[in-house]
Picture 1 (cartoon, helix red, strand yellow):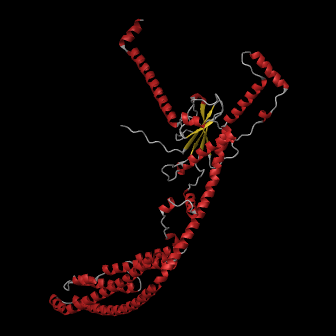
Picture 2 (spheres, rainbow, N blue to C red):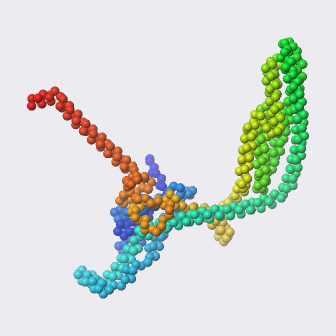
Picture 3 (tube, one colour):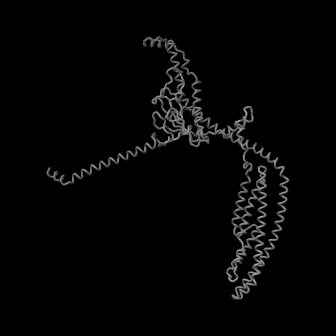
Length: 537
């Protein structure tokens, strides 16, 4: 079973219809007028002045207001609140016009003796059994005039629409400024309360911070001593490598037997070199791991302080994270450049592998020396890029306020919904929240379609962003505002395309029939029987 398409949300389009005789105006959220809904909008002005049902031929479109999709807010029930607000105010203003109006001078104009005499003459000539005086005729005329004045709302409808859009435009700009100002004030109060709570909590942690700082300083001293020991180990490893290179040079001029015999003499040197390398790697990696542990502990302590962090603390935390990333790169470098694997694969009977081991050791030594200065040979570009990026990030953080990183307090739903009516503070908070949630209206992208292009001149002023478009030719129902119309035409594009297609088909059919008739004539003339008949004739 096919389901009906879901109804479009109300508020994006507003349709105004007018009576062709009385200029009465009714508003609708749908293109088709609903009988009961429209009759409720008409005032009761006495007997025989309000119809029991609407007649199609008596009502024509006056204008159509089309709001863009960008005016849609996040409310699921009322996605186009601005359009519904316009619709509500239009009906309210029309009610005010029906109740508050200035009597025209004609109602107060006194009738002269000649006017009364002329009315009396007309009554005498009318005949009939109904007895009326000239004063009854004058009273009925004034009553009909008042009814026509109340019914004629065409000009008021156009002026009301312009006034509402102007009001929404000014109110939208004012509301946006008010909302931003109130939101900023609320945020400052909230941050002040956060800092107050954080300062009370931070006083209890001062002693702990001092103790941790002292431990960090002592750890730095121990790390410097460890680096000094590593320097001595590097020198010893370099001396052992020089001995290995000298042995390699002598090995090139030896025979196979001499190489094997000399290899037995070099094995103690190889074992010494392996021990030095392993100690150097273990010591360096242990120093890196110790530094990382200290940084992780400091980072956790800073994170545990939570809201008590000041801006200087946050900058320090950012520097620690950057240093931690650099140390991770250092640890990866030491793991990648490992000479122990090359030493294990060393075969003294093959000078090429020994030569490869020599260059591996030289690369490793250069890496260790440059690492001590804060550089790496294989990752120099990476570290330089990292430092440049870190400097750029630091420049970004110079004008950055870390207060914006603090989350707001959670909203107490029970207090917001079930606050006592006598609580002034709760009422102010609730009203402030309503103002913050109130949508900001705008006139950008709004289009008004007019049945008569001269109708907009009933209003003295219109918002600059509102566009005025002439409505296509219609009879009783307003055209669809979502349908595109070609420039200078009152017919929808799809109708024009369909008509053009039909014209092409008709032209092709005419051409085919014409060619068919020509072919039949040619065949008749060139048949033998036809030629004989022609010659005999």
